[in-house]
Every structure is written in structure tokens, then in C-alpha cells.
Length: 126
Length: 364
Image (cartoon, rainbow over the protein chains, first blue to last red):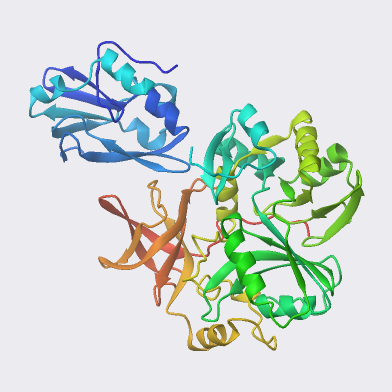
């Protein structure tokens, strides 16, 4: 069974969001890393890029295939997790610890529109 | 799961092993058991076994068998000793590829053709359709045969010790038949991984026994996932990626298997013309800078203009480099040409290289 953390928000495309002030930390869920298998590459945006809710901001790739990353929030990328450039497999080891990007959000209401842990657990069961 | 998928005789074993199953060529096939990387490395460094029962088998028998095989096959089987195997293609009149296949010479009046799963119906129809006027009997034996491929540097000792089949004397691209449990089992020194290895053809019951013995002996089961990464690294084509009805063997950079000095074969005229005039596009290798991974269908560009597309791409498990095979227009096929591959929103610089990203280690 994959891990779901109580205090985070989730998208139905399996990204998680942790909001601190106006900075949203974004990663993929444990369920997603498990479904992908061994991750060999994380295609991350660049600091300064604008991302929009519901639009792709990069990709995670297993040996076999690429899966788009869909941004759960809108705003400006202020930091990316550079450790993933050399060690993408960190996402497999702990998907919640190893975030992908931090976004200075432009619309806090967007975060409210995301799923809570219980609702996300239902998405995973389907 | 899609309806009407065919299950191989080892299907229940894959499910029990917890394999990730996926449709391939009309069959429900194992993609991976433990993981593509682990399985890939088992074959490169030790030994692994694949269920390749989805492959098709066609037997051509009769007084005109040699003449007929020569007619439909671009490679030249003339003068070959019994027991030799040839790789090559069947082509349409326009040079496009019907399929790539192995031809096993049993004798001058009998050949055994091994074809791709996804093309069985099309190939059998094509073979029969072109047999008019030849005194041959054509039998699709695909439903009868199961097949496993045992691949890797330890393949020979595994087949010898675990299966008790003496294969040491079988040379590369040769086969022998062995009478086992009242049936004729075919064992060839062939494969699709770039490593030494064997392919074993027999009844479903025999194939199940072989599989079970190999599992008991602890041989790593390998799925189609690593079959693709292994064949790709050594530059072997996959029908549908590097070969198709729209891609000739010359364009696929497989001219060495097309014997234009043969008196006749289907597609000869078109292929000879293409060879003489030079192709307009060709399959080449690309090595990318950095870690982004090129995938099938991604555009290849020069100065912002598309000049081709990726046919297969991976982060090579054996070398760690991002590499691809691609179909590109001339003159961008020259070794050392700088190109860019468009991956999602960005382009990444790469250079044209030989489409062999890892050296084969065949035992010849």
C-alpha cells in the first residue's frame, strides 16, 4: 500500500503540494513513484519559469516511458531540487521527502481546490 | 485488459511471478518481473530467460522450397549447409518491408521461418499469396510452438547443465534438432540481445517444462521491457520502429542483408534502384548531451528545422548515456553531424554516431 501524508494537498494526476506562506513545494506521490517503477530522469523546469495549474511543467521518466508532470498550482518557480539531476532515484526512495520544485503561488485559492488526503486515497483506490 | 489477447503457454507462470503484463503484438506479454534494469543486467553479465512464444513460425516444405525462399527473402541462402540460419527481410515490390525474420535451413527442400508476433497473419498471407507456381507446402506452425530465449554469457552452461541439452557445438547462427520426450526440439544459437544465447522451440508442454526447470535453477525471468533495451543498445531493429512497410532495409541501414547480386527476389528492382541512386533518408544513431531521454516520435532538428525523428531512444542501461536511433534526411546522416532533439518544450544538442551503443559479445 502506498503512503499518503495527512497534511498535504493532492492532484488527481498524483502530485502533492505543501503550502508554507506563499511558497508551494511540489512533488509526486508515493503511489506515482511506485506505478512508474525505477525513475531514471526528472525533467524539471528552470528557476524563473512560470507554471500554471493543470499544465505540464516537466516529466518523470522510467526506463520505458516518460510521464508528464502536471502543475497543481500557478506561479513562479523559485527553486528546483537539484539533487534529482544526478540522483533521480531519490524519488523512488522517498517521494515526499524528495520534492521537485518550489513555486511562489499567484492564487492561494488554487491550493484549496486540490484534494485532501482522504479524497486522494479514493483516487488511488480506483 | 484488452479483449482477445492471446496467452502464451507460459502466461499463468508470468502472472504467478507477479509480472507486469501488457499487450504486445496481439499477445498478453510480460514487460518486467523484477525491473527492467535488473533483468537487462542479468542478460549482459549472467543469464536470463525470455518467453518469446509470441513469435511466429512458418514451415516451407517441398521440391521448390529453396527457389521459393530465395524469391521472398532478401538475403541469400544459396549453398548454405543444412542447419545454418539467416537474418533478413521480406519486402514488397516497392522495397518497403513486410517483416524481418530468421530463416532456418533444414535442407534444400525444407526451411523454417521465424517471424514477428505482430505480423503473423500478414506474413502468412503474404507468403501464401506469393507461393503460386512454386511446388511448396506452407504451414503456419505458430499455434504449435512455444519458444524461450536463454541469453547471456552463461547461456551455454545453463542450457547444458539445467536443460541437459548439449549445445556447445552449435555455432553462431546455426541450429540443431534434438529428439526429446518424443518430439523434435529446435535449438539455435541466436537471440535479440547482443549476447551469446540460444532459442529453444518445442511444444507447449515441452516449453513449460523448460521454463519450470530454469526457474527452479534460479535463472532470471526477463520481460519484453529489457528485450527492447538490450536489442536497442546493440543497434538491432524492431519492426514498427526501424522497419515498416514505409521503410526499406536500405533506409534502415541494413543493406548488408540485401543481396542484390541474387538473380531475383521480390523488391529487388526497387532496392537496387534505391541503392544505386542513394537513399533520401536513413536510420542513424544519436548521442545526446546531458540526461534528457529521447523517445520514439520526438523530432530531430538542425537549425530549427525538422530533419527526422527518433525511432527508439533510451538512457542506455549499459553505458548510462542518452542515445537513440533516428530516421534522418540526407545529408544529416553523416557521422559527427550536430543535431538537436526536441524533448517536450526544449531542444537538446546531440551528435550523429554509429547505431551501436554497446558492443555485441557473440560467441562465434
